[in-house]
Image (cartoon, rainbow, N blue to C red; front, side, top):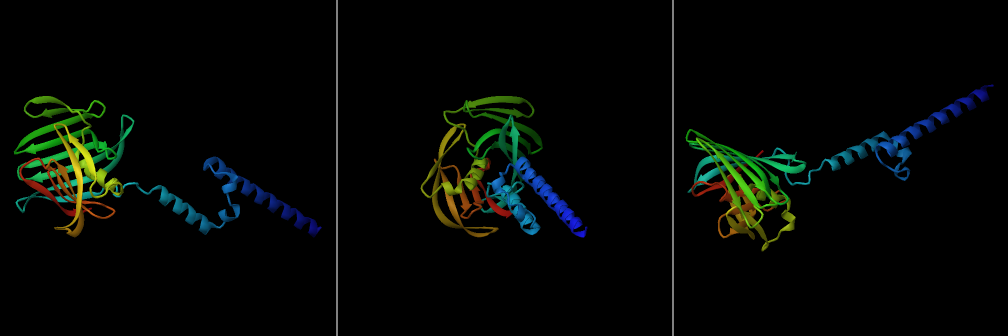
Length: 270
């Protein structure tokens, strides 16, 4: 009698074991898209190893393809003839979809005596092509709003300026129009694709340029001394020193600020 009870109990345990295995197998096959051959049931019940595997897979899936993170803020000083005259913060805010297309979202905040400019840029880092730029400027007490709407296919931009009066201007180009801030992030993203001597075609609405990856050089900024990769435009307009490492942070930028003989120097990264 006792033997029969033991056999019955053992049979029940085996059935329960089979049921549990079936449920687990169904979960992985139907919910996770795995095949039976990829499932190791015994390892599943080794909770320590299973948890480590899930954590590793989750971490891998969350790795950003960019060498910078959403929320990274680059803090620059505005310098003119060696004197600091203002500040610029450039923040990468991430990606969002506009009309079903993924766009990178960058905020540029500039402050100097009598001048404040908040610029929001939507565009593609892959091709450094802007889609829309919105600027709110306060210049010596006057409020100015500027909207730039780009059509990559037509190679044109419509610029609307609202101040005491509103003006609209359309500029057509023979080439795809770029944006220097998007270009900074493009170079950081594609750094491994470029080597010294390479050129990047970079065009503004009214000027055609090439960005030459010129040379490796040393540079000292308030945040430290670094080995940098010097990139300059042909014809001469922009000069950029990128930190020569995996992050490729711009250390010094000349030509990106539209007033006076000024340049940006990296102060800090947040």
